[in-house]
Figure 1 (cartoon, rainbow, N blue to C red):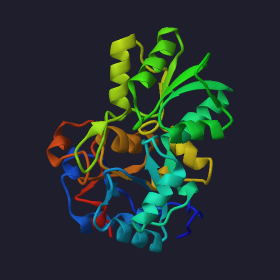
Figure 2 (figure 1 turned 45 degrees about the vertical axis):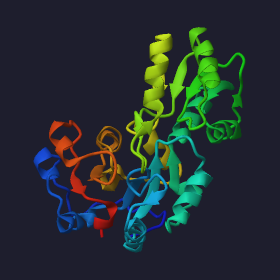
Figure 3 (figure 1 turned 90 degrees about the vertical axis):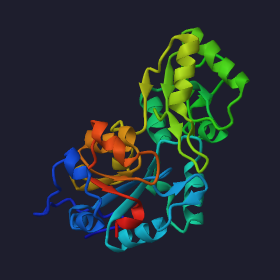
Figure 4 (figure 1 turned 180 degrees about the horizontal axis):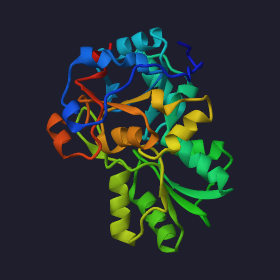
Length: 288
């Protein structure tokens, strides 16, 4: 095996089981571990997977460390656009999980890549200072007048004045982009409104929906990783707590999926989903 960024591309004779709802009922860690040899790269969701709000998931740091020791390349993926990469690196390190900026992939990365590709120079941002800084750092002006797009992010600094300013631009015909689609963000105090909830509110007020949404489950997140290093999705594993973002993302890029029950999803929800995971464990602590 090669790592940390030396991805092995060759296959072997170890295969994952097919993605069937009945298989997803198997929560045996030993059964999961038998398939780790077919994995070179692991994508970890953050909120609800490695930590919940300000509390780490028990055993998460040990699991990530053991997987790296086994030669797995690790990336940390989050739709949460309220913070910068540096803030996520610092949070992970506070939970004894070493990380670098290049290992943290945010929905913001896909958004910025799109704006650059479209040669967009001016946007109005409904989002945190961290999101505004990330956009500005990419050379795109964050403005209050004559924007080419209104960008909707997870705004933990939200005010009515900011909502009203975004609505004025949207009502004037400026198209919207959204960093991600999550309806709520998990926390130790329960679910809190996320971008998906903001979009529903904006649609109720303006009648408009975003022109494009980034982040999981769109393949744009994989493109952000592959811009840094070659990754074979067939030998990758997505680990997360959400069916409609994490598990669907794995399906969309052709990776395998591990659902952990430490965040949003409950076991009884698996019978009604179209995005059944390949594996289910109580938490990342059971991976190794």
